[in-house]
Length: 330
Image (cartoon, rainbow, N blue to C red; front, side, top):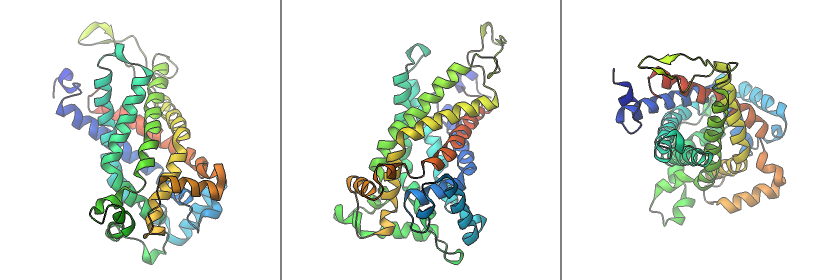
């Protein structure tokens, strides 16, 4: 086994690999926990004509889920989830690795830690992970949006081919770069990721720091580290329920701060499926949402967003912390 000081050198390849595995596993488990809610939220945000009547009420999410189950069975609730897992492992791995690297760069010691730097590290990590995995997210949304009957369920290859051949975005780039089609809605995604990831990491750090040294929520003891009997363990682990509570709080705050941009992003992502010959940009999409639903249109599905994101972020941070301890990194 590698020396602990070498293992915890954040710039080392060993640390990057271990933190990447921890982040990827955390992301996959978190997304699997809320996969059915994720699909329902996408259908609401994108104003799917079959499910739009259920949007706007808390019970509507359960009614929509029941209808999906009746028409497509249990697998319908997880439609697009395989693509989610393919996307989320590299997304979460890159996000947590990038966060650790940005944090080491901006805050090399505890004396350098500030709220602004925590926010910056989280935001930069979120933007970095989105840049590399956005096409996978677009494909996942298209798969989740499709509500064909059981016998006509969309395929991964068919969806990729459809996006690749959509002419609207290509016309803007003079038909040369097909990859542009896989970045529909990228601008609001980046704009939304800055407050979402920044606030999420910042809130989680703040709440956990407040909780770590309280015996009621942490496993805090005065036990000394074996290699240094004069030193108290600096980061006592939280109890499981406290880890979940801190993560859930971070998710709640982050979701509220960035939700309107998430709605705009979803509408742009499915735009190619609804009107492949017309590329609708950020401003046009914003105006259309406001015209149809007014200000509340930017918060369609927020209640289910809370139900989804609180356990997702809670599981994500809790599993990540547990995986770091399991892989012997700090």
